[in-house]
Amino acid sequence: MRVTETLKTATILLFAGMITIGVNGCKKKAGCTDPTAVNYDATAKVDDGSCISQADQAYADADGIMGGKLYDKFWATETGWTAPTGINAADISDYGDFYRCKQCHGWDQMGNEGAYNNRAPQVGRPSVGPSLFEPIVNDPKEEFFDHIYNTTGRAVDPTLTQDGTTGSGNIMPAFGNILTEAETWDIIKFLLEERYDVTQLYDLVTTGTYPTGTHTFTNIGLDGSATAGDAFFTANCATCHGADGKGILIVDDGDTLTVGFFGRNKPYELQHKIKFGNLGSAMVGVPTATVSDVKDLFKALQNQTKYPD
Image 1 (cartoon, rainbow, N blue to C red):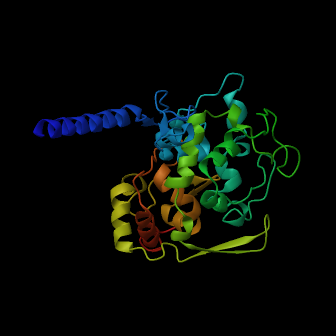
Image 2 (image 1 turned 45 degrees about the vertical axis):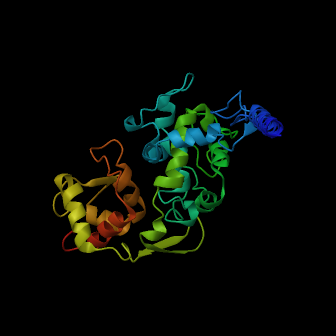
C-alpha cells in the first residue's frame, strides 16, 4: 500500500515538472519588435513597449543650447555650421535675414504677433512670419522636423535682394538642403526645452496689425528681484559691460546701446542673448540662466540711475 502511494506521489511530481518545463519552454522573449526602432531586437517575439524611435533618439541626442544659436544665425562661427556641397556660404550670410529663423519668427517666437509686429519688409529683409507659440505647445516634434527639414522651400538664391512682400523672399528656405538632420533636431530641442517663454518675463501689449502695429512692454522683470538681478549682472556681465552697463556697448541694427537701454527697450531680444550669447562677439551667454535669473536681471535694469542710457 505504501509503495503504491509512493509511486502515485512520484508520478504527480513528475507530471508537474513536465508541465513546468513545458510552460517555461514556450515562454517567448520580450523586447522591441519594431524593425524601424533604434533598439530593434530581431530575436524578440513579444513587444515589451521598449522601442525607441529614430526621432526620439535624435531628439534625446540633440543640443538645445546649440539650437538657440542656430535659430539666431546658423552660419555663425560659434555653431560650426559648414555649407553643404553646392551651396556657397556667402550666398546665405550676405542676405542673412532671408535665412534666419529669428527674422521670420522673432526673438520671442511670437512672429508678427509679438515684438516684430512692426518690422515691415524691406529690400534685403522679408516679411515676418507667423507665431510659433501654438505649434510649440501642440505639434509633435516629428511634425516640427518635417516642417523644417522635409518641406519644399526656396533654394539658396545669391541675388535675393527683392522686397520681402514680393517674389520668393517670404517663402521658407528648403532647410533640408542647408542644415543637417542633427542641426534641425538641435533647433527643435531649443524650441521645446531651452527657449524662454517671454510671457513669464514681461507683459506685452500690442495694437494694430502687422506690419504697422505697435507694441509696449510693461512690468519688465515681473516679480523678479532687483537685488538678485544686480548680483547676476555683477557676476556675469559687469566684466565686459562695466558696473553700469556702459562699458562695451551692444551693437544692434547699427545702433550702439547700453545694457540698461537695451533691457528697457528690447527685452524680447536681450532675453535670448543672455542665454545664447551675441554671436560674432565676445558675449558667449550664460547657458544655465533660468527664467528667474532673467526676471531678476530685467527687474534690476529698470533702474535707470544704476544702468543709464
